[in-house]
Every structure is written in C-alpha cells, then in structure tokens.
Length: 210
Ligand code: BG6
Ligand code: MG
Picture 1 (cartoon, helix red, strand yellow):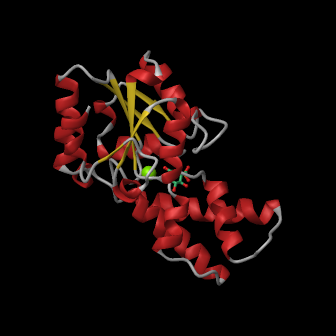
Picture 2: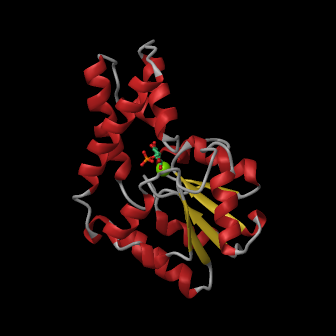
C-alpha cells in the first residue's frame, strides 16, 4: 500500500483542460493553425511556453522570442478569465469522496501540476483544504516529462517516490512519474498509455488499487 498519492490537477481533479483547449484554440485560429482536440492532447502536462512551441511547430511558424512571450501572455489572460467562472461546484462528488476516503486511510496527498495557475484553481474550487502539499509550475525549473514536479511533491510530503503513486491524464505526466520512480496511474487520455503502471476509468477506482 502507498503512503502518499500525488495528483495532477488539470484534467484529473478538475476539467480545466477544456479551458486550456479553448484558450489555445483561439490563439491557433488567429495564427491560421489547424488545432483540434487530438492536437490538444499533445499539450497535456506540458508547460505554457513548450505548449506554444508545439502549436507553432504544427503550423511550421517561427516567431521571435518577444512575439512568443506576447502570445503566451494573451493565451494566459484568456485562460485566467475562463478560470474565474470556477466555483466549488466544478469539483465532482467522486473527486471529493475519494480525497476524503484517502485522508481517512491516513494516506498523504499532494498536487503535482506544471501550471503556474494551480494555487488560484485550488482556491477558487475550495480544493486546497484536501491537500498536504502543492508542487506546481512556480517551484520547478523543468516541466513534465521531467520528474522534478513530482519529486518535489514527494519531498514536501516527506516521502520517497517509491512510497507514492501519481495520478495523471497526460502521457508526459506518466513519463515524468515513471522517470522519478513513482507508481504511475493513468486516467482519461493517459488510461490508454501502455507505460502507465495501472489504468483507471474514474478517480474512485483509485481506492481499490492502492
Ligand atoms: C498543465 C496543463 O497542468 O499546466 C498544461 O496540463 C498547461 O496544458 C500547463 O500548459 C501550464 O499551465 P499554466 O496555467 O501555467 O499556463
Ligand atoms: Mg493534466
């Protein structure tokens, strides 16, 4: 049995992945780059600037650093204005029940997210109170698939990676967890990724596999 679970945020605990998609799509449309849900899956777990580079690559566009900074800023402004509509009702009962049951079992929980907006999301949704630690885009220098975000999360919990499982919806996130020596659990888009140690159809299934 694992002593700690580290949860990715966007797309695992809350459907902000849809808001990322809407915001990036509006930028891609302006640039005339075809961008759909399939392409959006490439951005899961990836940092803001790396996501922009992937989109520009899809359109064979090369821009200056200043142009890229402006686009990334505009994307974030749109994304944050979408986030402002988040309330605690955006968190499913399944997510809440699972987090409560883990706590009752004495399992420590952390968030492991590449996002610099993670703390804002946790505050708006009331999710912050469920976690013992938060490791996010503000405390890392290397984004997923590098393991840094989860290694820091385990460290904040006072646990080794071997004592922790990671729940992820991103291929890059599963690679990150595996590289750090964590037990990786795929959900959503990552539930069909062969490198995940375990796969779940919904978050409640976690309780029977850890
Ligand atoms: C991850 C998302 O959680 O955070 C990515 O899966 C996103 O799609 C990344 O690019 C960075 O987010 P932010 O909020 O810092 O732009
Ligand atoms: Mg995610």
